[in-house]
Length: 196
Image (cartoon, rainbow, N blue to C red; front, side, top):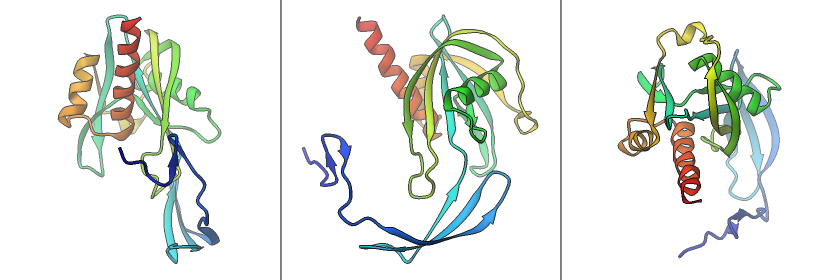
């Protein structure tokens, strides 16, 4: 088995000579995104590095008593199609990931959860943004209040068994990075629990 030189026991090691930011300039500032152009120096550093700043995101594997997972489907402008995802979205400024996950679950599905488990945190596009997506497993579902925003008017919801959610990932029917990762991690957690 090959071990990358930059990793030691699964943990990244510090680079001997990291890139250094010489200057940073905001190229564009919008309501939800900021684009920056950095000037860098250091070994193999590009002269210019462009990146975006966006809010961290959350995705929730909401598991009902019946062992079914809540999925939402909505229109996504950039891919130009409807996409199947887990409930979730962007965190508000200063909002803790768990608070954002609770809010997004209820707003998009009309369900709340009593028990929450943090599955992982991922960097879905580390070359383009430092934004992270926080992944949760939520159980003990109870009715809440649906409160979708106007851009989610066409959103639909369904529930599927966990095995079907995994199959949707494997078949390519579910491709959003946070949803894919969370479904696979939740499936592993549940498999371990079944062995106990």
